[in-house]
Image (cartoon, rainbow, N blue to C red; front, top):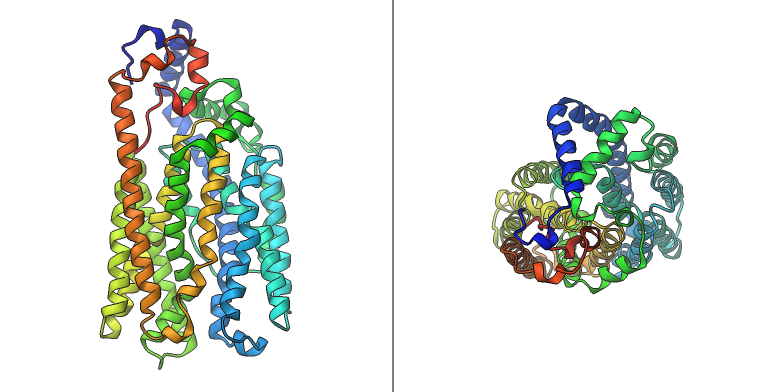
Length: 462
């Protein structure tokens, strides 16, 4: 954006640096793309596999229900739902602290270390004999898995610009068919393979590291001061004072109700569509739904990164999923109800996933961004506590309460998306018109850059 006020224009020295960097970038696009491909190959496959295992290790209890887990362990009443929900008590408690201190914990070692730990816990979960030991394992699993997802989001922001983040995040939401011991092996491998930051990426040459660092500097020019990349108490406090971060957190809570209920109860829902289907056949029918969910998210992520629009995709995804829930409630044949599962899958990752990549791209200062990601995912993930109770066994086969509540929450999701979009668009218009320049008329260029997303120079991605 071009600013009219001479008081907050770039210094000639900074403009010269920007100009030289831009010229260098324009003259060597091929080298930059080569660096990005190298980073992709050294980050995305491994973190994708790690998250696949984490999600499966967490959600496999839903499959266990189909194969007689409740009978084998003597579970009664809502004890199964409680075993699902208790996981999130320890899970959410770890998210904010882990993101705030991620840099100090060495990201590569920390992410890999918790993968080893949850692999051990998952392996020994197979030996539980009663309800109490199941609860203990679920609590431990939540404790060691809790830091993973928010830390992966923050970790990706170290290497990718705001125009690249949604597609890369898409790899994190992929599913697979591995669990237990493979998590331990991947964690050990990641300990030595992953890099903590662009500066320590062992698989890049010195010149390639410099290229990667310059890309980040250009993308976050509004917070390019030395303190912007460090953990500051003022940034942590600022995150808790920003209403938009709380709005994103609420948005994720509403969206995650659908994610968790779908992940845990899709086999149960499909079984209810036709009770004559065998357990193995039901398991097979869940696979296309999750594959379609991943395809839908990748398509939306690509379009979102390309167009640099987030809110509109989130709103549309809410509407598509609502249609799916209506089909499951009102459908009177197998084909309509099973198709409804695909409509839900179309939006299941998009609603939450777009919000997850939208928020950090609008927070250029590390301290505020890492705290905000932890807040967003802590509140969002806590949806896993009430979600299991939306589909009680007695509501089969229609599960009207669960679908109806989810429809209402998705409607609220669409509203929150709209409010955030309107607020950011309105702020961008004011800044483009110079209506916020007076706030920084007495500040130096460096002091203005210290403001991060509060700077009149910062333009929100919408």
